[in-house]
Length: 287
Image 1 (cartoon, rainbow, N blue to C red):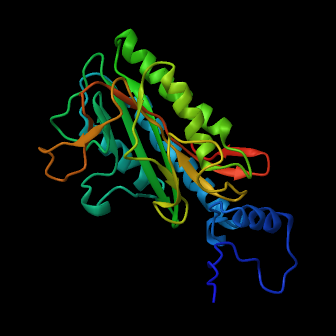
Image 2 (spheres, helix red, strand yellow; image 1 turned 120 degrees about the vertical axis):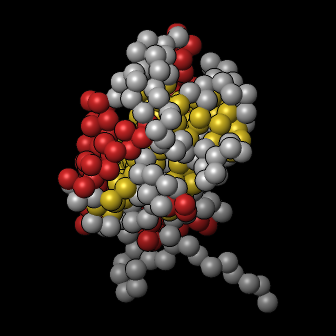
């Protein structure tokens, strides 16, 4: 007797099939991975995530207004904590799987998950990624920005610019009833023009009701592969673009086991937004 694979997409009981139901079931029948119903956020949930995104943007704006040569990354952490307290929000990173601070501050060759320290002093020419996730009334929003400290090299300036372009190009490739692989394909194609490496060991992710949800949003890929993108899904795109190899390692001297560094210790850059998929494309929920 043949066994039937359990469907991921289940239409609502005693409700007529919608056009969205039919489209999702069509692609599932073609063997594509589709979201489960809980990944489609309700209007109320979307509004909660949107409000969290406003606070998240405010945190990064506060950092942008204060960041300067000579400040420590621990001071950046204090700015983020203070802003959250003033707005009744919680930093998702704090104590997450042992992460000791509220924000990730990743300088130059540190790809991501850099831990704020009193000994990390920003210097002229540094590039630094500040990555923050807000929890407001149980809803999550996640974003990061790159900052250039003073004047840096043309090579680093280009890396920061191209990383932002990769985010924007990935967002343009994200279409309703397209696929996650479309995003990664577009990002990888753009980065290759500059012979940059796209980190493969880390990726974007669903977000909103939890810190990390489905789908995994890889920043390399093939068109038509990965999970189907459906209106109501909320996810991040956050390409990590390395000046050299895509390969990375965990700093053995990091007692917490978090800091990710480029294998060749060349610089890395990353930008990130939280996006809502709509019937017409993505809406940015963080800036």
